[in-house]
Image (cartoon, rainbow, N blue to C red; front, side, top):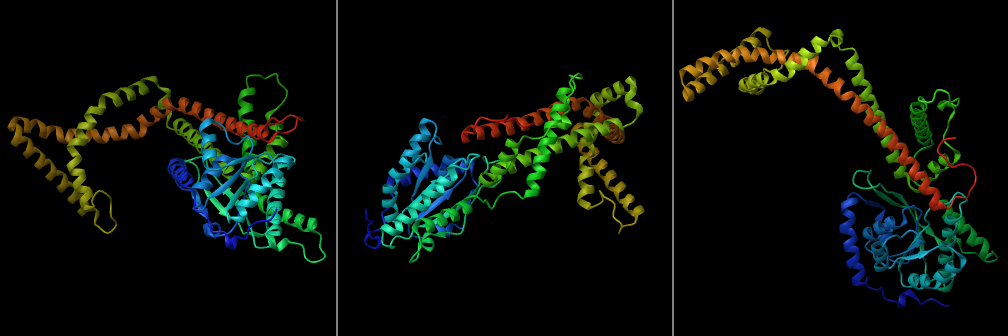
Length: 466
């Protein structure tokens, strides 16, 4: 089979239905991924045939994002089993996506259509999908990409020069996740790996396959090794902490939580995720940090409650504090309303806070003058609207309500906040414990889902801890 010369083939316009579906996908994805950025976009916008290699495990979601981000039409080859549901299959069909399970038969059947696409200067996006522990599927994707590139060059008498672009993804779970990024790595020129005179074609093709494997096996967004070790240690500590509380009800058990560690399968999953989906590890790290901060706040509240004084041991003092907090609130609110004009005047004049550049005596005289002026203006207003008797009663309440406002302020700072913390502490402790369980459950679900999608062989136990 010979390919048509691209110089004689005019670039085809993008079909109207594809552009319509792409517009729908763009508007829909904006709700969930409003901050998607395509780094080195200009590399993909160049004309000419191109092969895009994606190893992100969320193949269908990544394909939709890729279609929405590119102005050129992208023909996506997805691993079998990545498109679920009627509407997802309908969208995939409308966007021209095809599924492939990387068997030799399906690879042979896909060569001819892909050759025609490359001859027409189109873009083919090849999704490697999940990489099983034995590393089968990702090398198969590399083999197919190398085969397409080499055959396109040879059958086109070197007029077809497809360029291979590895794409590295940092894809969060939505609006609340980290910013989603797609990095277009340095292009791999397939023509640079063509055999020279006297060289073997199979050996040259194998070198191209190795170059492609190396490019897609490294993700520039991956966490550093030290960060991975820290994350693994944090997850082990959380697992031990959870087991310690659970096993406290079984004192006869001889096994200790301190002896448990993450299983080798869980450690391998973390390393694999760092290559294919580092955003998931970043979100997991943020969840661990959020839990640590919530636990720290809970411990701080408990410490504040314990060191707030011996008055908590007296039921009479505790009851009196609760009664005054509830019954004294209207009086304190009345005093706050009365002194709000004076507070605004002090704040506007800069006298609300002490200043080292002013004489303290002059400062206090000015404050007293402003407060008394505010009292006078307020009494005058009451006298004007409600008469002399109401103004007389109101004048007496001004200093009394001000004095009680200071008393209530002391009560809130030294008594009420302690009582409120003490009441809310059990509920917060339960929420912190539930947050830890949810975090570990999320980790366990992601780990087990990865094992199922990778078709991990039956063998030793795949529990998180061992």
